[in-house]
Image (cartoon, rainbow, N blue to C red; front, side, top):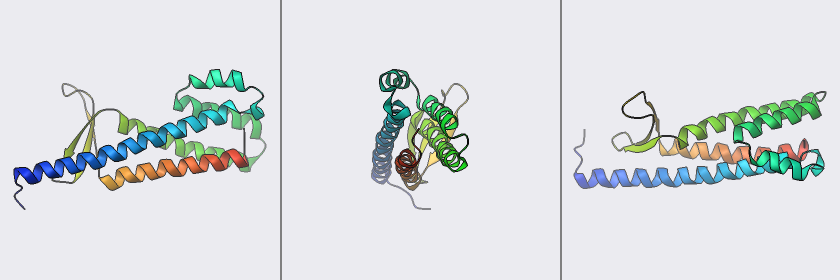
Length: 163
């Protein structure tokens, strides 16, 4: 095992911190776009006939509540169309996974493990129960790509099966 100098440790720590902060920042941007576009989809439900009312309602919803509302609207409109229901159900399942992953990434405090080339997210106070999650930079980038793909799938869903 290689002995690290203080300079090498600090350089590795800074590199990991910068790479993870950049990717996490991009995840935040991507998630906020996804959240806004989902909100717009919901506000424009019923061909925009209730735009003002739905804008007020949806603007106060969390992402989770928006997903639940989309599920309700899709069920109401497409209950007899299995293809449309399958498309919405598939998208919603992936969106819930992304939501959970985003929550894991955002909550807690971050550190780096330069020896294992990982960033570490810890949820909970040091005086109580804690949950530790470790990520490599490629794993964080994969989470970003999943969000970007979900964004594209939402556009397709809106075009093919509007609510």
